[in-house]
Length: 114
Image (cartoon, rainbow, N blue to C red; front, side, top):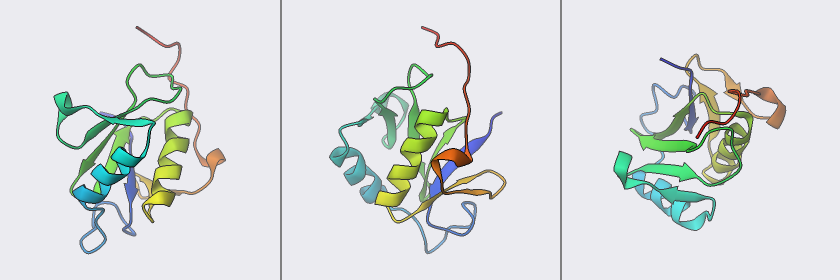
């Protein structure tokens, strides 16, 4: 279990009918962003972020019109904000809280392992 963050166009990530980010939009964004790389070992829409992160493999995954990850560290959260801006969306957590600024979320999972 963990806190999930979503890139969504909907007022609520869980009710996004009519506001979906299409799979083709997500794949096009990944292809255009040199910091993202598809990782098909985990699914067709699963991407790794190649930026500096506390995690060894910071990931994002498209599913049912949203792009999500669990417990993003501060750096991945900030990357999500820039992706959301590019897709005309916003970042929201499981509870529906919307995040808009770099300083709205901070999380350090501890020493990097691996």
